[in-house]
Image (cartoon, rainbow, N blue to C red):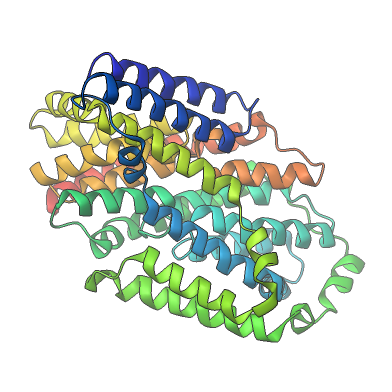
Length: 441
């Protein structure tokens, strides 16, 4: 690591994250301030050393994962148009009707639906879709929505693992593998390796959810159910034009994400083309739809990518990678265990996105030396580690924020007692599965 500039950059990174984790400051503003400070530190070092250390701000900006940022903006735009059309309300009522008002059955349907859409939408978009719908349906049926939101956040995290576009960390790791020129890892390897594991985790989690929430999933009153079910799902559609436009957009995304990866078609390119074509078709409502994009998350990610880019510039990440190589030596079992539990532990206390950015080069290095499964192992670790604690993943924070907006707060303890035991169980199962996969691939 470049000294002393490397130490200063690392201290700014740690300080920024301590402030963000305290929840006393806006995380987007803090991450951008942190990026600005490390940019200044790098510039001063660059000018005083004659260009031998540090970097210009332009160089720092080049390290930001702009493809990931554009992908997220595109997906948020599509979700905004679909929500305005009434599509998600239509889907919610369509899903509710077959359950007959049975709360346990409704819970199962919503969880399975979250699992399915998490393969196409990133976790933030998934909760932006399902959270408000869940609250709306549960309020209409006069049942507690908090067990639904907690479970949906957990499931969105692990259901996203088999898909490169399922979560921002997945995209970050996949992009880094591509940049490093590591062969053997692609979307199909990730899907084949992780889809069976995700299904296993779902099948294990559902009965555990039922047991944990057994006193919180009572059926609603019969007259309440009748009032809800008398409404036709078609009446939920506010704009047929936007409804069909959104439906076509989602269909194109699914096809492109499924078959486009093999031809090198990058997800951010697809998301941007589809999203802004849809916005173009909405004509005069473009500004209104753009205003509903979660810009707080976008700027948070820009700042985080900038902070991690500074760590790359001062060679901190390179040094960490070399240290990891020394620790795991040539023992695949140790390497698998390390890349599951260490990133998971870090993701529990730090947002899983920067953990992914920092450790992606290490996964690439291990993939080049051992097996292409290692990037998939890191994807598993950061996504599951993200729900060991509530602050570990954006999906958790968003679910809790949506609940608080309804004046029904999900406390840190409420989330912890459900998610933490499940996360530890999932990590144990995943370690065994991934060790097996590392031997056969």
